[in-house]
Structures are given as C-alpha cells and as structure tokens.
Image (tube, rainbow over all chains, first blue to last red; front, side):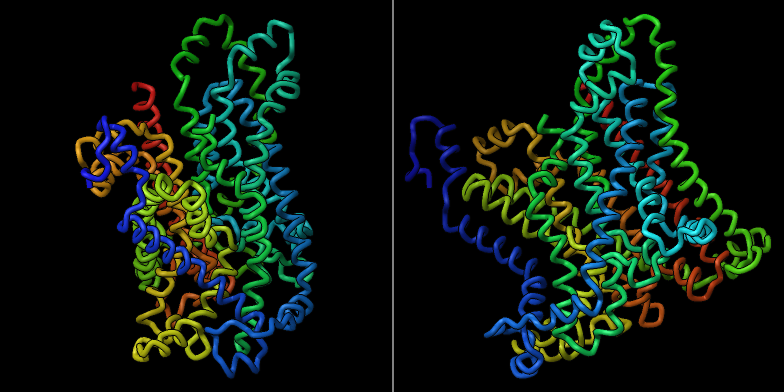
Length: 292
Length: 329
C-alpha cells in the first residue's frame, strides 16, 4: 500500500490514507448501509402494506410493494379514529405544555445560573429527582386530583402536568447554560443601574432565545410521545392524543393486517415529518455545548 | 428520546470558564446581599413543582401504606403492602425482566453505539463525506422519534404469527422452523421485546457518542495513525478511553429509562403471556387500574422510585466528578 502512495512527508501520506476509498472501506460502507436499510425496513413495510388492497395482501403477502397504491385504508382509519381531532389534541398539548415548562424553568434557571442563589445544588437535585421518579409514582394521585378539580378528561390537566414535569429538565439545562453567561455583560448592565428583572427581560432572555428554541423542540417531541398519564387522564375519544389513540386500536384492528399497517404509518408520519423539518435543531440540541 | 441528550450537551458547556468565573465573583463586594433578590425568581418553578410533582409523589407514598380500591377512604395498614411485595413472585420476576430491558436499552446500545458512532465519525465521514455519515445517523435515529406506542403497533404487526412480515420472510427463505409466535409465546416474548428496544435505542447512543467524538482532540488519533495503528486498534485504545464520560452517563441514564419502561409492554404484550413480560412499571399500573389494589400498586411505584433516585444520585456524583476533572485539566 505504501508503495502506491509514497509521498514526501509521513503526515501527508497518512492524511491521504485517511481519505482513501479502498475495497475494504467500500465493504464497511456497504455493511453500514445495510444496517441502515434494516433499521428502516419496518417503516418501509408499513408503507408498502398500508397502500395495499386486502385482495392484493391475500394474493401476494406482506413483502411485495403494491402495484397500484391504494389510499382507502389510510382514509378509513383517519375517519374512524377521527385523526384530525387527535392531531389537534397532540398539537395543543405539545405546544402549550412546553410554553409552561419554559416559563417556569427560565425563571428558576435565572435564579440559579445568573443569581447563583445559595443552595442551588440542592434545588437542582430536587428538580433532578422529578425526571427520575417513574410516572407510576404520581399517576394515581394526579388521577384523583384531576377528578376532584373537574380536570379529568380535559386536555388542560395534561398541559399543566407536563408543563410542570418537564420544567425540571428545562431548569437543569438552562441553569447549566446560564451559569456560564458572560459576567462582563451582567456587570455592565448593573453599573448602568438595570434591575435584575430588566436584565432578565432585555439581556438574558433575548440572548438565550436560541437555546430556548432548541429546548422547545425537544419538549414538543417528549410531550407528543407521552403515554401513561394521558392514558389514565384522557379516557374519551375526543380528548385523546396521537400517541394514545394508537394504543386503543390494537384490539379493534388486529384482524386486518393492512389496516394495522395504515394505523402505524399514520401514527408515525407526524413525528417523521417533524424530524425532517427540525433535524438540524435536534442535532444541534445534542451538540449545543460543543458548538459554542 | 430522553433527557440525557441535551443534558450531556448542557453539561459539557458548563465545563469551561468556571475557574475565572468564580475568581471574579469572589472579588465583587456585597454579592451575598445582592443574591437575596434572586430567590424571588425561584417561586413559580418551585411552587408548581412542589404542588404537582411533590404533592402527587408524597400522596402516592401515603397510599402505599394503605389498603384502598380507589373508592371511599384509604385504610392505613402500615408496612403490609411492602411485606407482601417481598413475597410476591411476580414482583421479583418483574425486576428480573427489567434486567432484560437494561441489556436491551442500555448495555447493548451503548457498546454497539460507540462502535457504530466511531465507524461513522472517523471512518465513513472522512472517506465518503459528512453527508453520508449524517444520512446513516439519521436513518438509525428514526425509531427514536416515533412514539413508543406506535413502535409497538408497528412491531406487533411485523411479528404477527401468520400475517406478519417477519414470519412471511422467514418462510420465504426456507427458515420455516423459526416462524414463531414471537410475542405470544412465553419463551420468545421477552427476547422479542428486547430486540425491538435495541432497534429503538441505538440511534440515541449513536447521536450522543458522535457528538462526544467531535469534542475529542484529533491529534491523538493522528499520532497513533502515524505510528501505524489500525482503525480498530485506535478505536479500542483511544476512542473508547476518551469517551469515558459519555459512556458512563449514557449507561446510567438509559438504565433509568429501562427501569421505567411501560408503553411497549402495554401495547405489545400487556405483561404477558402470563407474566412473561411483566415489568415493574406495568406491574404497578396493573394493580392501580386492573386489580384496583391501589395501595399495592403505589408500593411498587414507591420501591421503583427509591431505586431510581439512588441511581440518579450516582449519576449526579459521576457528573460532578467529571466536571471537577475537566476544571483541573
């Protein structure tokens, strides 16, 4: 190999080698591509069978792709479960709950990260416990409370619960980001006589906006995917979310495989669209620290 | 998707600038007095949190000491639910099953994830471009984004005994004897669920580890390469060691997620057949709403909470230690 790539300096040679596409590297590339294809195979199968007529399914089985895509199952499922309503409910929960979370966590994080209040580690520890205790350890009292307050079977209860629950993580993240907020800016504002509220509103908040948007994107998805608490608190059809409505379809759709494929496909589609639209934001969320 | 993603990102960013920061603050006068006014900002978050989360949690602990069917008034029975738990075979079994989920959601995805992330980051990306690496990462991340209930519907359908894709495929390639009732047999149900969870989790670990790798200093890799180390040697010795912090945090946080697993079990097996896929979270739910032994369900949830809180404390300690290590560097 070195005979072919003989170059003046050793580093150059290695740089070249790093980028060379050898037979072995094509093999590894191919193997990884195969893994990705296997990973996406379930989605592909859902598409293939959701678009197949029952007759074609019986005739050619689940593995083939339909000759003439048929939208009947999807539109029937959409109508039967009132999918528009479920979408609307999910959107309501996943936009309002993050707003509450961000509001609460921004205030707390301001006290912890900027104000550096005493006992901040203990406070953060308290919030941290919120996202480690299982929802099962809260769900029954929440169920009782929602019934007593007249919020049972009401989206508002879900909005409040997840708004508060996810604020724990928001506080954790925002505190950590704000703890390295440039001290000079804060000092300058203080010398100019700005109050802590003014500093928060007109300096810290605008500068934190990009982080808040990343946080909102993640919270949107988490709230969208929540299951246990909505399962307990939202019994009626008109108040269920997308993630929840799917759980109820297992029983009534088991007999018909193409209809089930349509249900799975329809349920997954909003999340996949969201993923493609916000992919950059999501990946930035993960690398937020290293980008800075 | 879970909390660690941004958590690890947020944590990473706090490594820097800590030392000059504290020095500066020490110099400033009267800081202690000025700090007082910031307590005000804690009020909304703490009040909401203590009422909703704290309130329900402690009420649940109270319920766990009572006998109650959800109607009328709970009757105080002391430790009775807990002593009963200790002798409940299904309870212990549910924790044994939780270990399958720890393997499937934490251990296997972490090890495979480091390996795949390294392949994508410093093998595929330099040779075939960042775009192809990003595409592969996105492809494997897809199962993470979909609600677990829908993942459940999808896989229950793929694994259906006669009409399912998997069995049709196996029959087609002549492996008829492996065309089993995957989710319906006691022997295969927990393994099937485990494999599905590996499918779900791997994208998460790949994304975390790829972002971890981007923070590593490439000069070490280059030096090793000049010395003639193969990709695999470099992976084993350098990448693995340098990703230590990420690996530790991911292992522990995904273990927390594995112990909480509920939706896939609810949708795909309902804890069955029999109790073959019973897990702690589902076991608790089952007693709340199916047997309506609410006190008993609350006791299960409380035990699980204590266990998870202990894990959380371990996570915090590890992260703090890392942060201190990073500051010393």
